[in-house]
Length: 217
Ligand SMILES: C[S@@+](CC[C@H](N)C(=O)[O-])C[C@H]1O[C@@H](n2cnc3c(N)ncnc32)[C@H](O)[C@@H]1O
Image (cartoon, rainbow, N blue to C red; front, side):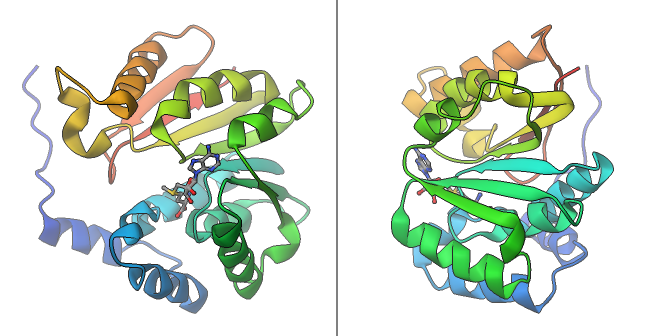
């Protein structure tokens, strides 16, 4: 098929970013603080994608959300803002220092009361949760080798109509590698599974580093 998408160079990407709505002072403070972390800053969810996550949560009228990999809390703030007033977000983060930073940031952004943190390997946190339909929204953004396991562990815990979202499904372009590293191979496996997994409806978006959505019927 030869339907050419618009080529998003860095100038156009910046234009998209600058038109992401809702980047208030609290979010810009997190952006600045994360930018000061040098190379680590690339781990932060892109502002336009974070705005999109908030929109998805709002559209789904979600009450219960879970994030796998929280870092400095940027995506968490937007997911929490998308939730109903009585909604809750469970943030799973391996690194206690990052969880502390994220806690401070979600508090400063005014959504702290909605957010709970569990520090440790996310797969253990998820598997320890009751295996019953609970979550309306999930955002998977941690170690890439773990994605297939996160998917299988989250599926039975999603409510009917719930949405699981996966960041970095393009792996910075490495998803096309014929001789992939471990993380890329895991992502290739997940992408190939999702495209015709009868348990979900899915769509892959070429936003930022690629975002896939899998909706549980
Ligand atoms: C890409 S960053 C997350 C970015 C974040 N979602 C945001 O919105 O900016 C990945 C995070 O996953 C965490 N992580 C890595 N392996 C993990 C694991 N096994 N369990 C939980 N968190 C993990 C890392 O410490 C890191 O903070």
